[in-house]
Image (cartoon, rainbow, N blue to C red; front, side, top):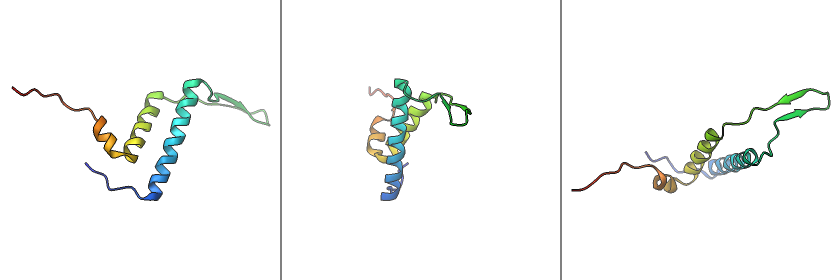
Length: 83
């Protein structure tokens, strides 16, 4: 099913989300993401690591929204034989 073309505002929003998701993925993969933070009051906040599979899926979905031609090309297809 074809989606209607994105407006320039939507494209900007999805591109910003894609950039942020890629940065988050990179931080998790390199171990640079913060897992625990202690603020000025001494309160401790812990973060659970994100599910990399879901994050990678989210990145692919955003890429497909921004470039539907690539999405069609990379989509799995059934294999058939002609006799």
